Every structure is written in C-alpha cells, then in structure tokens.
Length: 178
Image (cartoon, rainbow, N blue to C red; front, side):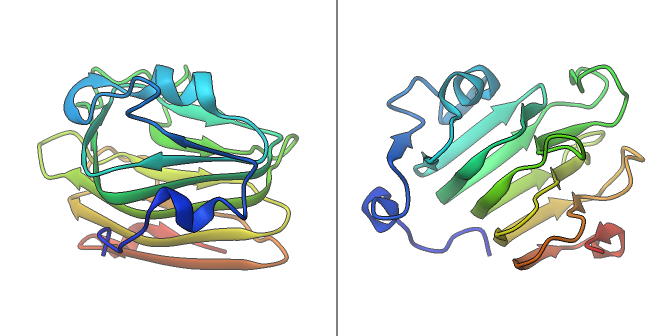
C-alpha cells in the first residue's frame, strides 16, 4: 500500500486546481516541514499532488469547511517529527492531518496513496482525523511503525453519507472508523 500509481493528470477532470506540492515549494527530501506549503495551497476544488519522495511534517495541517479537496501521493512517504517536538495546534492531540471539524466539516475529501513512516521512537501520532458530511475517500495508506503517542490511533473518520476507507497498519488495533 501507499505506492499505487497515479499522476497529476489522473485527477484534472475532478478538480479545478491540481497542484504539485514540490513545484509549490515542498521539500521531498524530508529535510524541511511541508506544512506551510500545504496551508498556502489548500483550497476548495483543489488536489495537492505529492510526487515520489519523503515529506517531513513537524506541525498539524488543519483545513476545515472545504468542498472537493484532496491529497494524493505517488510513492510518497510522510515522516512525522518526534511528537515531543511536534506542534499539534495546542490541544495535545497530535495529528498530521485534521480535515474538517464538527462545526466546520468538509465535503468530498480524498486522501490516498501514502506511506507514513512512524518507525522512529515517538513518531506514532494520529495520521488523519477527518470530519466530512459526504464523499469521504481514504485509501492506500500504509502506516509503518508503532502508534506510540497515546493519541487514540492513526485514523478517525466519523460517519458520513458515502465513504471508502482502506488503511493498512501494523498497529491497526487503534483504527477508528465509526
């Protein structure tokens, strides 16, 4: 998982904007945090495309109230910072992606084709927390390592009308998809 083949053009008919995050300034060598690039480019009717590489994150990416937003990787590996150094947004619930919240949910969310490397000590944080009213697709996500931060597991995606979820984890006892 996390290595399914995709290209930017595969999604151009589904999104008004398809942005290659490396062309927008994201470091795909895993040396600098990509969160500012995600924050600068997230928008309605937008797909953020991650070409092959390693993407370091040291703070949560939060995007709420969106319509038709996606993130797709092609042999892309996400590498979270040690959670003692991670900026979780002030609530001590460390997440890589917080997409939608109960009072500002999203609609039509796609997250697919990522490997998440949590093999280093103290990097096992929640990968995705998504609050979406309709149209949730999360698939081909492979979490490597151990969920060791105590933040309730690598995935939380409360119910919505339509959804597809397929996540692989060697620590899957902590997956939450009500």
